Amino acid sequence: MGDNEMAVNCLVCGERISNANEQHLTVNLADGSTFYAHKRCVQAIRMLITNKASLPNELGESCPDLVHSLFLEHWFSESRTLNDVSSEIKRMGYNYSSATISNVLRSFTRKGILTRRGKPRSYTYVQKRPPA
Ligand SMILES: [Zn+2]
Image (cartoon, rainbow, N blue to C red; front, side, top):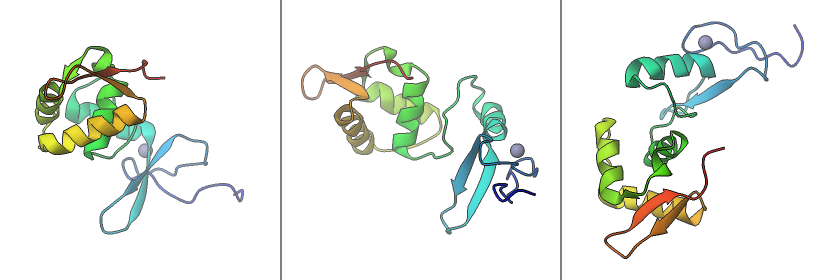
């Protein structure tokens, strides 16, 4: 066994994650424990749960992660209002407040991921450029 081999097993399939180059995700739980999982295993599970072909690349389900996953799915290729984003996130089963979502949209605009148009209270958000 080489020094570079990771001695961790996939949280999902239980098989060894054989080397640092194999695509895997780190799963940090609230209690401080850390697990690893093959990216393909996580994607398979997410596909089962969400029934979506296009999947977020992170495990997290924080509000920024959700908005980022929508961006990655090209959902922001059309202009979206705060209301649109809010209902889409609700449809995905999460219940973040409009204030939280609004903050996330503002931060994504600051980071240059989204562009904001329109006037206060009727802003729309659209991707600045397509996801890489
Ligand atoms: Zn696995």
